[in-house]
Length: 151
Image (cartoon, rainbow, N blue to C red; front, top):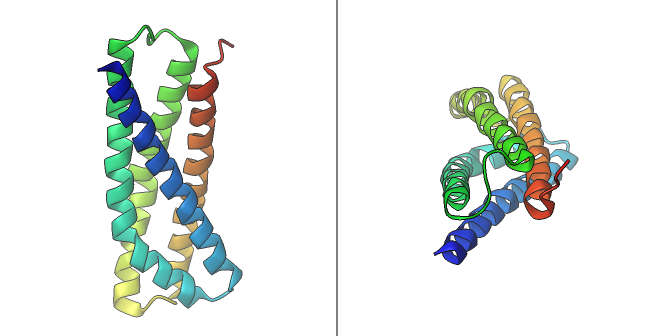
């Protein structure tokens, strides 16, 4: 059972992290064009899929991670687990209470006024910044999960 849970945990984490990196690459490409319409259209077209992808894979990654703690010799007292849980918690909290509301607001503006609207562009930039932060945090968590430092 341990191997299957570990496989699921790693697979879900790969999809979560890979999706995050892919969105970063798409966003960087759209921003290089210096065309607010291109960035707005990309944001509009990927928002629903991103929301479902990240909410499902993050939930499954977290759930399988906790399950692993209960069925292996890993314990919540291990500092790398504590730091990882705190970082993932901060990332999810930032997504839920900062990025998601701004994303919904940007989408409302895009649907009302168009993808090139300056107000939407400001919100999109805030969501992009939160996404970059999430990607950086997930990279740190990935490092902790792989190397399990004792500090």
